[in-house]
Image (cartoon, rainbow, N blue to C red; front, side, top):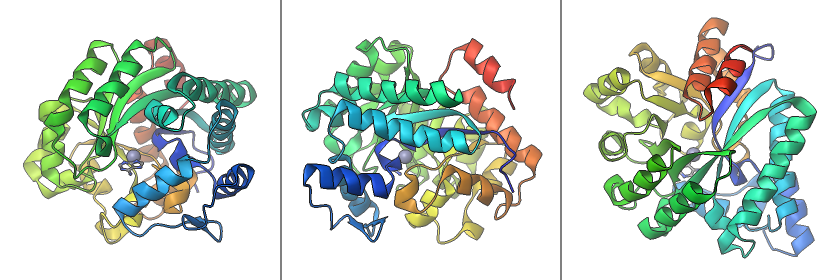
Length: 322
Ligand SMILES: Nc1ncnc2[nH]cnc12
Ligand SMILES: [Zn+2]
């Protein structure tokens, strides 16, 4: 039972959190045929590449500023309902551009959703702008430039998501330089679909304070030591890793081994309904399947706040609530 624990989430893709029922209603509203991607209330995909395709198709039924406000408010309300005090949402202004809404309207809708949710429950949230690796370095640089120039106090981080097998991290280093120079926090998907080399690449080329997943670092014990020595925080999403077949089962998932090796680990849900999970379930898995005590789970939540892309005053206020 973890319902009595305060929760924090550092790694959730906004469109990846879209509830299937809301997506079905949106598709009907816009007359979009989504029957290949959404069947019997569940998203349909069979491997990482088809997951990314399904994700992009689902994203297409969220079209207006108000659609994005509603999606954001819905997800943050769900989080607040399980005692989540802080959430970082991974968002893609490029997607706003691609669907013709525009990056500013996309972000403005999301910020309105944050405002509405915060007013009801007090939940605090920030945005991590992401580039999508499969759209290539130029597009990722564009996302970084957007985030750097936005001057939006809720945009506090930059990420690289998408097809990890495309190119090497160094190809995207310039985007991270732009984001770093603008004072944004840096995190990057690595060591999820690709092996330990991808985590090493990320450390060498980006020097991020956090890594999304990073779990395949376990394939190289020297690299695990390097992560522990650097204090790099891993945003670990066990349910996602099992759903995508990164590990065959929870018994072989390295969350506990990484923690015991001194790596700073945190728990998140990634794209919850796509992976039949939720932040609530991830906390339950931490307690039940991984056998962590309440104190150990609270320590991971505290690590997440320490690594959050927020100002010191907000960090202090959040830490005081754990
Ligand atoms: N788990 C994941 N890995 C990489 N890119 C993503 N985009 C959405 N979810 C993702
Ligand atoms: Zn992710």
